[in-house]
Length: 149
Image (cartoon, rainbow, N blue to C red; front, top):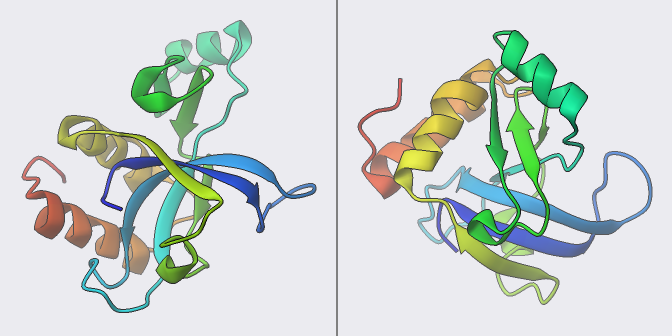
């Protein structure tokens, strides 16, 4: 697995609401910079609740968001990520690696990841400064990105 991978995790065992179900994620990095050690993994989960009301609100305000259309990077439905989208940093990378319930469906290239970082992660309500710094470090060292703030 690499930064930017789009994952579907069947029967995701850590739902914030409701019973376990399949959940989509974008892999943003881990606390060990993928050096092989066990560490926390950083994932963001897009929302599939995209309707005209939400889109109009996003366009009329300074709302920070990014939309993925159906089939973009393997997504099965139109979805969005924003500064309120589900962010996960509370389980370990070894729960993903070799997990039969986790499948990679695509990958977002660096340009898309830079947008995600600069527009969404920096303004996200649930990301601590330390975790944000870890993600930035992953992006800089692993992907060689230079256009992140």
